[in-house]
Image 1: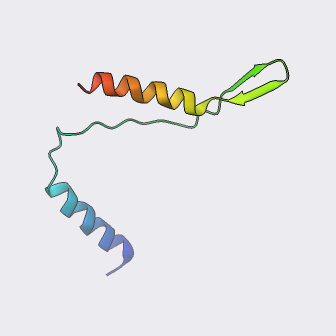
Image 2 (image 1 turned 90 degrees about the horizontal axis):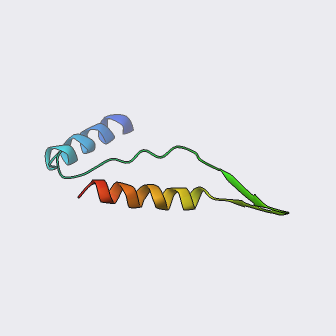
Length: 61
């Protein structure tokens, strides 16, 4: 059995035990946005991620 076959079998076993209505999926792409203030440049992807997750949690209730 190949690694792929084993992984697929494991995934099927996990899926058979899960309720498809019991979770949500959030897709988040690469968003390395820069915020610059004068000479200070800061990447804010974590800030964007935190807001996205907060909104996802609101909609999942």
